[in-house]
Image 1 (cartoon, rainbow, N blue to C red):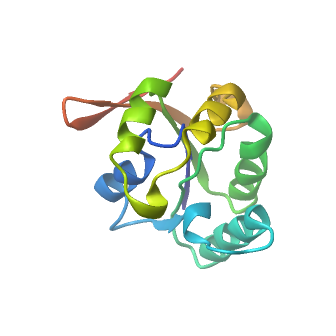
Image 2: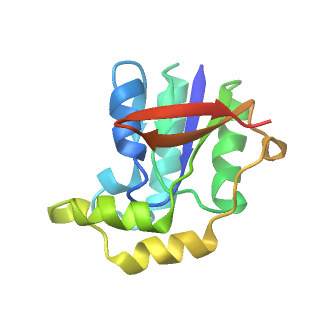
Length: 149
């Protein structure tokens, strides 16, 4: 079993990466897909737990900027004996603003959201409890990943 946790600014390519690498194999859980739910974080954790109880691999596709945002997900994955993998999307604010400007409808977020997330971003480390951690960059129309020691 596997729990993949995405970490990165809005517009960094997280959902595109999911579609290109995980759509056929992993359950996709994102607060963006939850709609109007009172406590989106609790609902997200409940959905992760449901999927893991069913033995399904999961991708949590959210910004997860702080250690304290990621900790409950990591703990839940460990509780189920899952391999917990972090994917840190290393994209500048300028890159994310540019990609966000190309979005339409609800997919486009206010620029202030990207700036706010950037200020809160704590680069993940293996010490948080990840079994593996990767840096993801979008380059020349494809994603490149490299292991973070």
